[in-house]
Image (tube, rainbow, N blue to C red; front, side):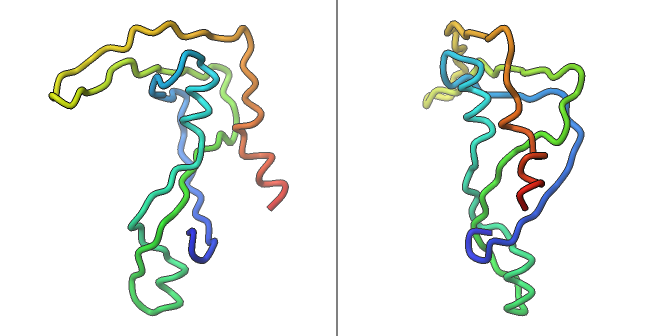
Length: 114
């Protein structure tokens, strides 16, 4: 919660990440997917508990990976919707590195500091 700094952690099993194609490198697309996102009008359990009624607040939502699987798949979403309602395919070239450093996306490093 942006207001009271309470945190909610939800764990789920996922080996495939569907990432929007936003730039020409796989690493930049992954960073964009994992960057914090502001989500508004979410009930904050802590603020609601303190006030005695449901309180809507803004939260920062961010994905982290708890443990890397043997095979982690990325699905690059190459389609987008035009203002006219038509579907458009993004045919841009995407570079993939030979190795991909996933350490900055692992939550283990965050859990050790909190």
